[in-house]
Image (cartoon, rainbow, N blue to C red; front, side, top):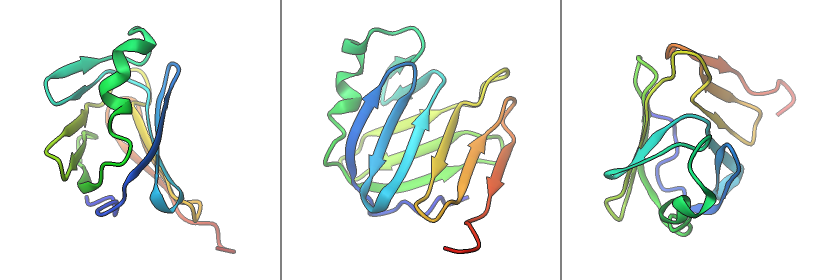
Length: 122
């Protein structure tokens, strides 16, 4: 499924047991489980803050495509060639996407995708 983030740029990255990327237009991608950035494997839960420098260097980069597979795998490809991949976690929510209209997509434990529609008033 296309997540509708094509052309959005990373505005900021924060990490503290979760990697949270703020995108243009008020979208947020949060990663709570181990993931890969190109060939670098990272875990928000166990790796030191310094290990996330390559993720913070995504600030200013533009998303080419962002997709979620039926199995729960998140793939974000940036125009500079960088690839971020988050596999589902058997026990925890591995990632989520929050949109400014209130829509939310969450990869639940085991890889099922849960969807919340936008608020009726938005």
